[in-house]
Amino acid sequence: MVQAEFERWLKADLQDVDLHTELQRIKGDEDAIKDRFAVSLHFGTAGLRGTIGAGTNRMNIWVVRQATQGVADWVKTQGGTQTVAISYDSRIKGNLFAMDAAGVLAANGIKVRIYDALMPVPALSFATRYYHCNAGIMITASHNPAKYNGYKAYGPDGCQMTDDAAAVVYDSIQKTDVLTGAKYMSFAEGVEKGLIRFVGDDCKEAFYQNVEACQVRPGLCKEAGLKLVYSPLNGTGLVPVTRVLRDIGISDLTIVPEQEYPNGYFTTAPYPNPEIRQALEKGLELAKEEEADLMLATDPDADRVGIAMRCADGTYELVTGNEMGVLLLDYICAGRIEKGTMPKNPVAVMSIVSTPLAVRVAEHYGVELRQVLTGFKWIGDQIAGLEKEGETDRFIFGFEESYGYLAGPYVRDKDAVVASMLICEMAAYYRSKGSSIKQRLEEI
Image (cartoon, rainbow, N blue to C red; front, top):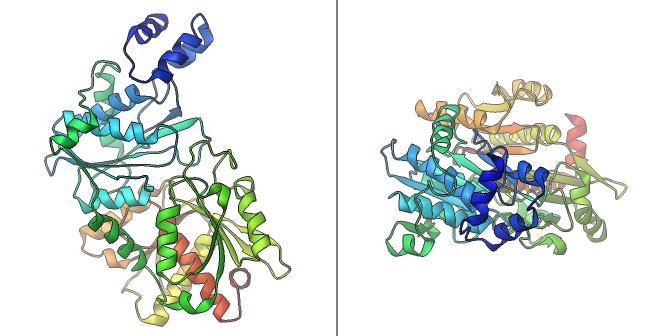
């Protein structure tokens, strides 16, 4: 059966020369064939993730089309606007997979709003909500090495797809032949028919406005003279993060040149994960040269941010996700109380594996801290609960220990854009008080 499926792919017009070349190369190699065809990538609540290549157990246009047909079948049962938002990051074939997903949706009569250039996870979550979409699709493999790509599916609330919805999509995928089962029209035809449209400037600007509305002390950064080094790790962060940081008044901003522009090969950070020091080495070198106060790095889909802070002796210390979660919670609470912008009965949310120190910080400020299962969608779920009661303004902050933060209800996934802004604002604030992030961390 495995060999038969291999032969079927070999004979098919695969529309991607790389796939055919790969299949020709592994002819007669039983292990290589089995690895690619014995199983299929499994669609779960986090969507798909796998190595880029030929076969049912790889990420390629055919597996993407099959998955998207499953999403389309689910969307068609939902009523509503019959619209899906799509974005992608800098990974290899990311834009190709995004355009193919759009072609499948259009062939199913579903309208598409797709970003005209790579944009991060929070921007996709925002567009899904902004256009009242039935679903969102993000082509990304987050911080995995370069050989991976993936496919994340979002529900109408901009939160990662629920277990129930993912199960329905999975069932539909099982009934869809990977090579012949998905309906498809070219991207150009979808555009011509008015089914595929780009995300408008109004949506992009609204995203930035919502991020910047989360400032605790607006205007503070203009005066602080903060010196910053930033690395997008060759991902999606460059445009949104630098735009927001400049908007709030940070002018001394140096980008790590080798990691500035999108590059799915991640040549200078083979494992582009801001949690690990190796990914931050280039940024740390530049920070030392520049004597920067802070070094920030966002992962390829810009939903997580890692930082290093300058110590008194000129060395740099990495801040863990737990430490930054506590620092931001403390800063937001103290600042909003001082500014009179703290809502009544404020709510913060964290994953149960995050630090218990946050509980004490929340108690100190009279904030209700809810603890949820691991996975940011459960934090999004808490915001959705508040939304149903018309109380979204009660939500002030959410975080998980794996460097994911969110400070407003405008999206339902972690957002490194707003986190980068608040980290810089916090650093500027402590600097203006003759203190530092490190000093405040020790005080807490």
